[in-house]
Image 1 (tube, rainbow, N blue to C red):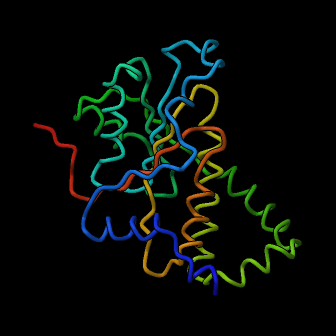
Image 2: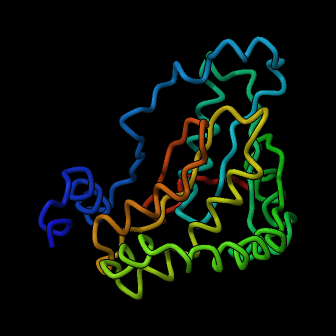
Length: 216
């Protein structure tokens, strides 16, 4: 398979970095902090500009820490932090997250995202996808394990795109782990599906060792 033979350098570097217990921040080739300051920004008050943190897994807190540190930079000092929690990824309410942010003395809005509407849309979309022959051909190259993960993260990506809009100027997303079962192009599809359109995005993965600490 040509796809497997041409594993790109970024995927090799990513997997080796995580295997050696390094935290990783991944950006696309097109990413630029200059994209955060467009002409449209003049219509948005500084206090309404938001950095969305989509904490999909507990990676030790690196995703949240990165967002917090960005707000200490002069470019982002007037940006608000919003931590988004998805109910079917283990966050049944926002109380626990709010408690954590309070203990860490991090000022952030906690947004609890209900996925019921997205699930209904997913069922309708599944019917449409069945009619696409090109999609079926593509699926023949994808393992059954990856198919299930791609469906899951495609839904999560729609949630992110739906809820991160308007005042959201930057998205920080906890990066899924590139398991050995993934071929590189399967993992690339997951990252693509998680990335919201027209919003600069950073994918972050910690080592699961806590980088956020507080004193009682």
